[in-house]
Length: 461
Image (cartoon, rainbow, N blue to C red; front, side, top):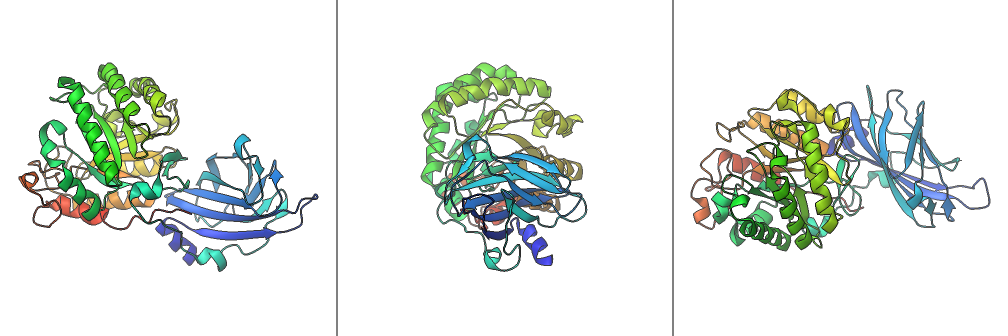
């Protein structure tokens, strides 16, 4: 039990179950089952079951297992039809994985809740045949997850949403860690070959978020020029193996519907131009404010089809109420989204925070919401919500630890030399060529570089 909980703390556990048993009919049934816990939070977890058929082809299969704690429940699942009776969970196939050929496999996943402890499931059966073998302890269970070598895009490829997680081309949950630009109209000199080389190679970032303001002397003043600049940064990120998050940075006015026509024009252009790329993520409204969730949802359901018409695969991030606080800053919470989600697939919901201003009640909301919604922290700061004031190291650390635990991706504000304490660089840095040494980093920049540059260990198997 201690070993299992220690593995949970690192974000993954695997138990190997090999079945070589006689079937109830003429086919010889055998399978290998790998159970993983991708992430765990207070009262909830995400589990995955990879089923590999080692025997003759099977069709119309049923996988059953037992959740040993009576408080454990399957809340939602994917890639199968899930049901639960008491402590017995049943996963039945959907159309596309109904048949498992010899050597074929399928990945199933679910979000579960629990009270008390969260021990591993037992008694796996396939088509009523007991999965004999070792469950936990010894064998493949002791092997660490296989991780890939290469740039973030080389390893992970085209991303997608699976359950509440951001997943890579191997259908494994991952976390991207990176930085956000400041407004391109003010700090364009900060984004060049030297700074992006430093971000990719020295900071070892996975992600560059490009903040293209719409107002504030931004896109509306020169649509073609700003679109070209965004596309150039997408290419520069791609050349360095980083993901590129295109941020339609609406702030004032806060109702994104004010910019609906501009958004359609912009996203039609960048989606068509970048559709073949695997590194692009679209953020369609930065921080909606002074607008209802219904208004945000309406905007999203008009803009997303424009993107999908050109790029059917890319992740789309939808801003949330109250400056992308899931409504907390407006006195609401995630329930309005859970009860009325955006009618689209492969989307995530934005959450923004500033560590000195947004603390325990915001963290509690994220912990709770992560069991039901795919979240992406597309912007956060280490200081107050004004972008200034002293760095709050303890709150920032608590936030980053939580995001790591939940595998929630993030981009820090900002990779710039703005004269504000949220900036990663001291003023004047962007006039030179050094973006990594301790002498050019602010206190915030040093903290973020230390966190981002630790190994990603992206799973590939």
